[in-house]
Length: 282
Image (cartoon, rainbow, N blue to C red; front, side, top):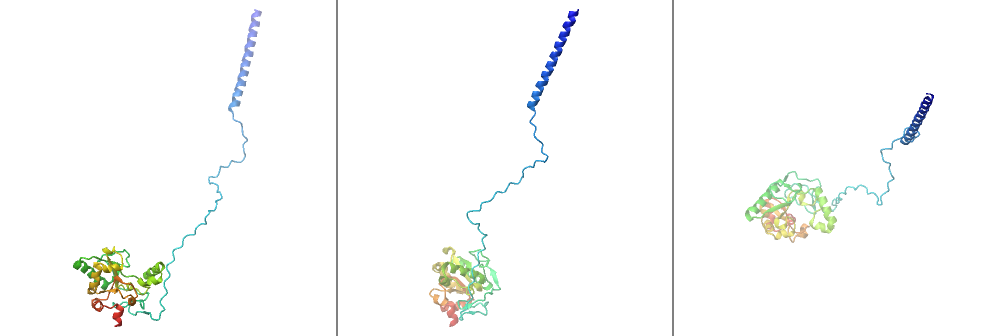
């Protein structure tokens, strides 16, 4: 009986030791696992960490190799030719007269604008510029009849290319011709401001399809040009700058340039064979 108690007592001690051993082993294993899983602790800063700025840092910009161009200035308007100081030049007193003589010695006032300009609504035109598609009323009505007769009588279709031109337009036009061709050449075919018949509103440059709607002295050799030269006076027009009269008119032969004078005077000038300058001098 005593031997059995001693035996059970030993068993109990062994079991207890085994349990303690197993418990201790469990604690050791659990500690190792926790050490592996836990991240290393970092020191906590007392100040909050700033986020990076959203705006990029500006880097120094290299200057371009070429200098920066300044804004282009508006092109300067062509200088206005100086007003004539020749003692032989006079300013016409009645620029609105139908028979006004305008040339290198008889100049229109720079402020003159005809009061009765009308649009060319009933004749074919070449250019879209509204200014040059105008004439004084009496000249326009005569032009309509001239174009109509050319078509009805001879089946010729004429076109209006350039009528009224203001003083300022002539300034620009003459200046461009001088710049491109030189003054000596420009003076043979372009009038200085104040010396252009176009400012009167009584002159028209005409052309036709055979001329490709351009202005050239070969217009006088076309059937249309010949018909105009022979019949324009019937409607109050003359060929203002005829061939062979350049020394008198001061301008080259221009078979396309017709000038309104009214039927009576135009017929007299035509039949006389004189230029308008010669007609007034006789």
